[in-house]
Image (cartoon, rainbow, N blue to C red; front, side):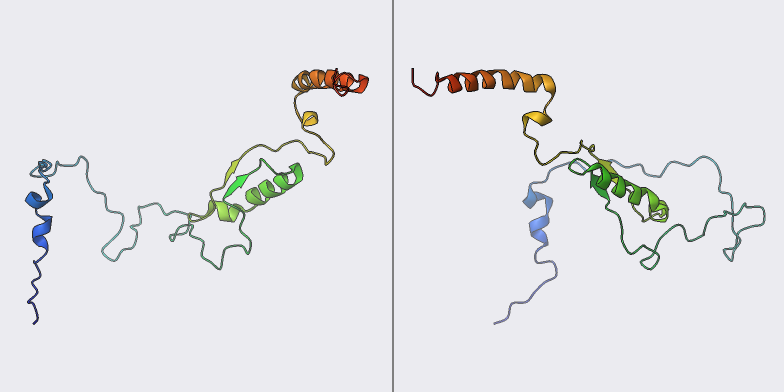
Length: 159
């Protein structure tokens, strides 16, 4: 047995009484308020600019850059310089600033460069060599005294 379907059969579930939605409707003006000023025509009935209207030197289609006009490699939009060497950071920032056609297009690149370039770190560096000098001295003094005691037999001999 088929049940007859109605287009409004589910509308009752969305009534305000069933949803318990008792908010008051927003009050609107009966008529919109009048605008100040007047409209100045810049084109004729065919859509051509009138002779008195100054023409723009830019393209009437804007600065949109299509797929074929884009470069083969696009620089990253978000660049974090924190973990990069100075040479790599300068290479990436130069690459971003060099692509002026891509950054000037309306759909182009809006780069965000964050972070700071750190000092070059060699492989043989320890934790304390990369830390501020005063902080490193505060760490090294107790360690050196313990090492001195251990070498004299104070800590290792069990006395």
